[in-house]
Length: 262
Ligand code: IPD
Ligand code: CA
Ligand code: CA
Image (cartoon, rainbow, N blue to C red; front, side, top):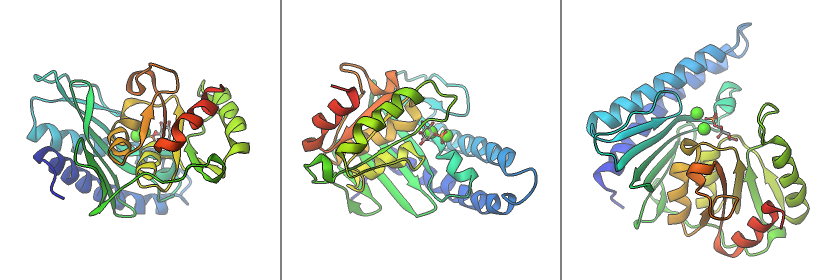
C-alpha cells in the first residue's frame, strides 16, 4: 500500500527519530545503575527528538503549523494544516528501561486528523493510517477486534500519577469497569494504546487528562481500522477536551456507558 507524499514524509521522519531514540534507550539502560540516574539524559533525548521532527516536517512543508509537546507552537502560513507531534510517548517507560514507547506524528487539516503515524522503534512496528486508505502495521492491514462481549474484552487506560487531578475519577472508572471485563492494562503509552486498539490487540481504550499530541495520530488509526472514537462526555471533541474513549463498534456504546457511569 502506497501512501501520500505527506504520509511518506511522516514515516521517514518517525523512523529516523525512532532509531536515534533506540540508541538513547540503550544508554538509559547503562545510566539506570548510575547514582544520578537517567532523568536529565532522557529530557535531553526527548527535546532533541522533537527538534529533529520539527526540522524534518517543517523543512519539507514550511507553510504548515507545528504543535509538539516539547516546544512552543508554531502557527503556519497555511492555517488549515498542522503537524501534531509527540516525539516520545511513554517517557516513564523509556526512563525505566521498559521497551514500550513510540514516536507519534499526526497531520491535521481543517481541524480533522487526516494522517497518523505511530512508530514503536524498539519493536520495529510502524502503525500508520490515512483517511480513506485504511490502517496498517508495517505492510499488514489492521482491523479492530471482533469481540462483542464486555466480559471477554481487555481495555487499556493510563492511570495518572498522584499529582494529576484526574486520579480520583480514573480510579472510579477502574472500579466500575474491572468487574465487567476480562482485564484492564495500563502500559504507559497513550499512542500505543490506540495503535493496539486499531490492531485488535486491545478491545478498547479510555483516558482522562490526555493532550492532543498523545491521541491525534491514534484517532485516525482507530477510525481507519473500523473503530469508534469520542470524548468521554457527549458532544466534546477529544482533541480539545482531553478525554478519550475508543473501541470496536459492537463494544463502544456499552463500554462508554460504563466509563460515563450511566
Ligand atoms: C503520557 C503517556 C501515558 C499517558 C499520559 C501521557 P508522555 O505521555 O502517553 O500513557 O497515561 O496521559 O501524558 O508524557 O509519556 O509523552
Ligand atoms: Ca504523550
Ligand atoms: Ca512525550
